[in-house]
Figure 1: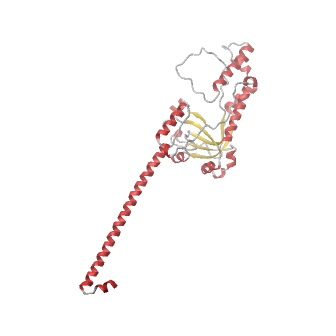
Figure 2: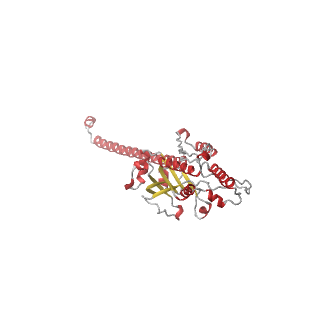
Figure 3: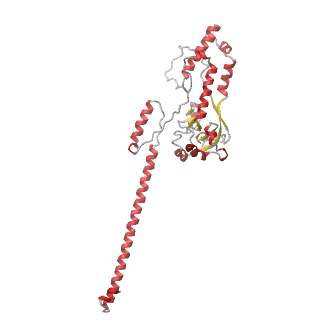
Length: 331
């Protein structure tokens, strides 16, 4: 999943803000079974399984909380969705350790190798500017700009403004509780803007990101650093048996994943609610069925009793008129 969180300012400006991601992309294995489930949400003229498999098409889900209860109308079927590069911290030009200390915890890296890239950038500056050009760290702006090659400047511009990969929006889905529940096994947590894309699009983005790193640093600078992104599927699904379908199982898994800094989402609570509703329905209809059976038995008993009573009265009348029992039996 590729994600971006809201900034603190964005949170303050959004009444009813929820602590969820602003953008999120779920890269999925494009099986036919999965595509059959999501294709019904696509524009009928854009249903193309091969294009989705190749990463040329995506499906976008929108929440309504960011626009005062209204859905964003700027994204429509046919829109070319552009995914940006991760902004590498290649502008760090100082390794000054005398910076003012803070009690706040350092921010969590936005992506792998962020700290390593910052270190490489600082070393590159020190080597190319301070040592080669004899500039001190107190006045390095002009020297640093001069040290940036044309390729460096072009790569920096593309990293900030050019798309890393592009895909066509095949459908826009306005989220509601029913859709969230239906697709909870595919997308456990929806961002404000969520896209479903093929793993091929993710692999292409990773390749482009690796190529970007190689444009900022030389082969000698990257040698032995291990700065190579790889595409890994970072979601897993755990299916419970009936013996484990209790809240204690969720609590154990949640504790394990939290220790390993992995987001955990369970649908056991929803299934428990569904099971309770099912049991209530069974009891309700069961009691109704039993009541209907008892009433039918009572009605049948009353009808049988009335029939026997009527037959008994007829026999009494016949006996009163002295008809012999043998004739009665024949009748």
